[in-house]
Figure 1 (cartoon, rainbow, N blue to C red):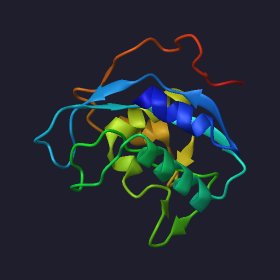
Figure 2 (cartoon, rainbow, N blue to C red):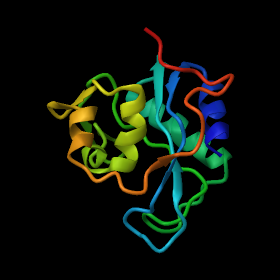
Figure 3 (tube, rainbow, N blue to C red):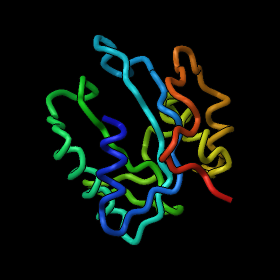
Length: 153
């Protein structure tokens, strides 16, 4: 499903995937009475506005069969916009940077793989991650399988 989500975003006009972390097996968070998740992080270049990028993510989720049944419950895919070139947005549709980003190791572990020095909320991703418990978060694939974009530069 993660590969399908990356493909859907890559096929969206105005979006170029520039980096992708490994996939990580992570324990459930919030509603813990469910199976473990797979998480990954992407770096993108985009000509879309933050809100248009969110809509592209929601559209990809819908095409992949996402049904919103219960908060933090089981789901086939969940695509979040975490950060957008330093934008600070807080409205009914979008909060940037993502409001829980610096509190969730399952988000920061893959993000640190592709952008450890990204500054969010006055600290780097690596610094935020250093404060959190990473128990149970494990990579489930090779760092850069064939055909997967990797960080450049």
